Image (cartoon, rainbow, N blue to C red):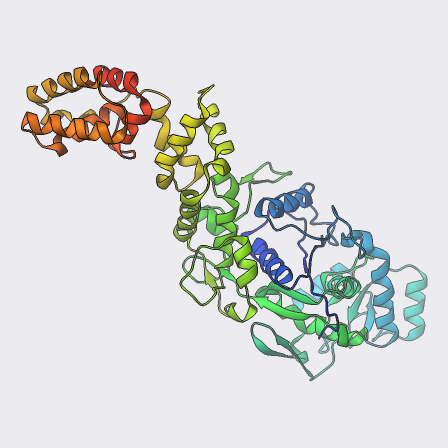
Length: 505
C-alpha cells in the first residue's frame, strides 16, 4: 500500500496505433478518481517496445484525451517534477534496477538466442521459461560464475529475467475484486531487460510508478496475469510499503458478451471502437472513430463511464463534473460490460437534444458549407437546428434531416400522395396559395388557417397534411409542418406549393 497521502494516478498507453474505447475508459476512471481526491492525473507514454512504435500515435493519444476533456496534469507535453514522461527517455534507470535484482539473487542473466528458444517451443508446445526448466537452459543459474562473467565481458547478447520463487502464493487486495492470489509455480520467469537494453513492461512499469510516486493504478483486467511479477518486483526492489493500490477494471465485451471487444468486431458489426479516426501510417488504412461519426465528446465520455460503473441510481446522463463528484470504486463492476452500440447512439442523441445550439453551431455551419450553401443567416440556422435537433442521432445527420430548409427539393415522394389525389385537393391547394399571401406568418396562425380551410372544404386534415409536407420537404419526414412553413417564409412556401402541385395532378 502506498504511503503517499497525495493521490497520483497515471494512464500509460503504448504509442502503437489508434486508441481503443477501453483505453479511453481506463484513462477516464483514472481521471475521475484523481479529480475526486484533488489529486494528479499523469499521462506516461510507454514506448519501450521500439519494434511496435508507430509515428503519430503519441500525438493522436494527446488529441483523443483533449477531445474527451480528460486533461493530464503532467505529461510529455506538460512536464512536471517527475519526468521524463516517455519511458524511452528513462532508459538509463532501468538497467541499474535490473542489475540490482541480479546481485540480490532475484533475477539472472539469460544468454539463450531467439533460435534456441524457438527450438524449445518446437520440442515443448507449451514451453515457458520457468523454474521447471531454467537450469537446463543457458543462463547465469545453469552456467558457472566464471562462464557468466566471460560471456558478459565478451558483450554476448543477453536478457535479464526475474527468478520467480517456487511454490509460493503472492496476493494483493484489489480495490474492485478484493483479495487476489497467485501460485508462483504457474508464473514464467519474465524478461525484465531486453537484449537491446530496453526494459520490458514489467520492469519499467514498477520502476516508473515508484519514481513518479503513483498512489493508485486503474488498469484493464487483461493485466491481472502480470500482477504476480509486479508484486514480486515491488518486494524484491525493497519498495513493498510504497506499492500503489490496484484496481483491475472489467473488460468491455463484444455485444454478444463472449470475449473482449476488438477492432474486428467493430468492422464486422459496423461501428467504431476507436475514439477518433486513425490512419495507419504504413498501410494508409483508415479505422473510423466516434468523433468523426458525429459523437459529442460529452456523450462518448458519458457512455464509457457507464460501461462497468453506475452510481446506484437510475440516472444515466452525467456531465464530466457530475462523474467526478459521484464516481466511487465500490460501484465498479467485477464482471465485463457488454458494448451496446444502440445504447451508445442513445447517449449521443440525448446529448445533442439537450445541447446548447452554440455548442453545435461550428459543426452545423461546416456541414452546411460542405453542401454548397453559403452566407446563411445565423439566427435562421439556429432556429432550424432547434426544430430538427430531437431527430439527430449524430451531428452529421443534420443535412439529411434539414437540407430542405436550405435547398428546395427536386425530388418528391409522389407515390405517397398521387394514388389518392383528387380534383378537390387540387382546388384546395390553389385556394391555399391565395390565402397564404395575406396570412400572419407564425406556426400557430398557419395551423389555424390551414385547419379552418380543411374544415370548410369538407375533407379530413390527415389527407391534406401529408401532401402539404411533401410539397415543402420532398418526403414524409421532418418536424412539425407548420414550424417548417414558418421558418421557410411566405415566399418560399408559396413557391414550393406552386412547383410541386402539378406533379400530383
